[in-house]
Length: 238
Image 1 (cartoon, rainbow, N blue to C red):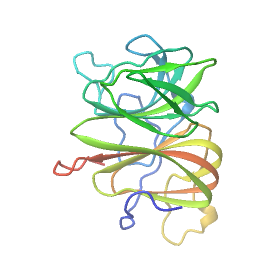
Image 2 (cartoon, helix red, strand yellow):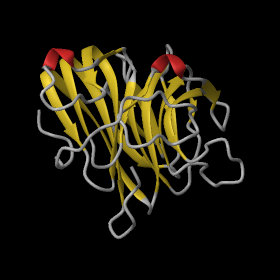
Image 3 (cartoon, helix red, strand yellow):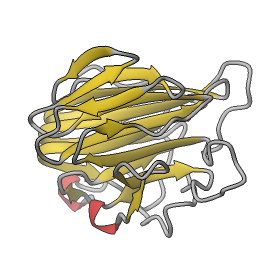
């Protein structure tokens, strides 16, 4: 598998920490974000529910236009209806359910298959149509002008190395299969069998801050959300 981002020089990584609350930004990572810890909230337009995977900034701050700098979340769409508008935000959507999702964007029908990605600006009028059963979709949102983003699906068959450059952050979310993550490092010379790893459940995620590395083992499929600082800005702190 091609590497995601540029591989920096090896640096010590702290032990994995569980994120204390959804609204707080974790440190450099890798940080485990368990699916079992997520709380569902109602969309701002009341048309569905969302479980935040990780958010920078407080999405519950009513005084902010968007309420976040960037956010990764999993929405449940269980009926036809409009998506909430997010002016000034760029969005990427990946259906997680087998049937995918049928969208209407400003009057145009856009079918999106399972694990395919559709990008669109948050101001665009987008609706879900033809929904016959509850459908999950993974969302990446970034505030336009401050950060850029990308969302894709990837596979591991054996071992995959992920790394971030300065000003870049990743969120890795398990889609299927059995995948272990090396969530902490041991002193040099420690036998591989003595190093700690964690088997990730479906929809468990790991946050990886700037200038960090993560090794995945196993056979499966995962999503990678990439968030990067717009060139010219100060790098995002790890």
